[in-house]
Image (cartoon, rainbow, N blue to C red):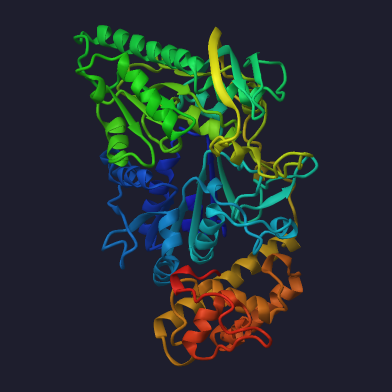
Length: 621
């Protein structure tokens, strides 16, 4: 695909790499950048990752001597902070979603100065925005969270990039929303839509788990499901249970039983099963290599423990350390959570060093962690969304080059035997993860989606876990799963006349509008002259976008007709948005900028200080 872009055989500039977790998608940016830079299609690469702990892995991908020799490239990138000149003379830089959201103008200016290959890692973290997505625009407005703020900050970069490479191990979001920038079509079921894998102007690299297993690129997974009973006291003080964790269908006792089990005796029993499994595996591999008991070496296998919350994670760590000789406990078992000192160093040691061999975490290490030595996962978490669990399971499916032949390796995942996990298993084996599903509101329940409820701490007045115990263990091998269904060009009927359908033209015009707004914002910020003085700063792109919306009759791009989009492009070709910022004078979100220009006046009938003054770094827009 990259070669086709270089030679001009295709006009596609959006590449979606839908690669099963553990399938090696982190190499794709290196392949793309090495060829595109050499051919002069792009000058720089910007690789955006969801967490700071993944920046080191991205740097390592470009520095790997094997791939530098195989691809004959000499490119280097650096993990950058939000200081000027993030590339510092290298071929590009790596940043995070949070970094771009904190300094959007800095990154947008880089994209306007250099032809850039934008790589967005784990793009499913970015929800679609109403500004460019008609389905999202048609839905009721909701309070925007952190993920939507990331989408708004990264959108201008997507619009300005010369080539876009979007990476994901799953093409669905846990909350059922669409993913930023991806093309969609109506799904096979009501209230659903699916990623249009054959959309015009897009190239899709599909690598399913079935393909990866056939090529021995990932390991097969065996699940150890532990059943048990749990008792708890509800918010009214009534003692309930014991109730079985397993069941044919989820019912009102499933989540309370699971919540209780993960914080009482059942959790210790499951953790013990996982600990014994990794201890026996390491003993067998030591014996096969002739190593002494306790001798550290790469390739012996490691245990990843995923806890439901930070307090419980610390408890699990204390339990594991009781099972290890006191002299080794603090070396062998470590904790990595968002509030753990030196958490990133501990993650790097877990990936690159023989010890620690046990890592307890909550969510910090579940996605994107490239640690092939992980052979056993203790899934002590109550989250049951498919994308989240797929990523967690994949931490153990990487092939370890230091662990011997492929046939001797497997991924072993221990988990509670609840019906919600069984449902995840069935979906993973039978469905493609390409859907955006709008959940139906359930009468008498919270409007928050289940994926978010799962991650919230227990309410203070909620249930009180009393006791639980383990009953029986069963093992199952995960089926390969479905292929990624894509229609290939050679399967299509020959078409004598190529026509652009309206949806393709609309998408192209929306992208063109975004590029033009971004170009004016960067040009005006650089000049700081005349009417532009004092308007530069955080959010200039979004102020210009808001001004364009006022000019076009308060109509978002996603809601415009084809004729309206063409008219908006024509208007931008003849006008400067900086000359129309007075249209925002009645909007308190942009009042600070207007006062800075000396042009703002309070709307008629409203006091001048209706809202406190907001500094530019806090402006909305």
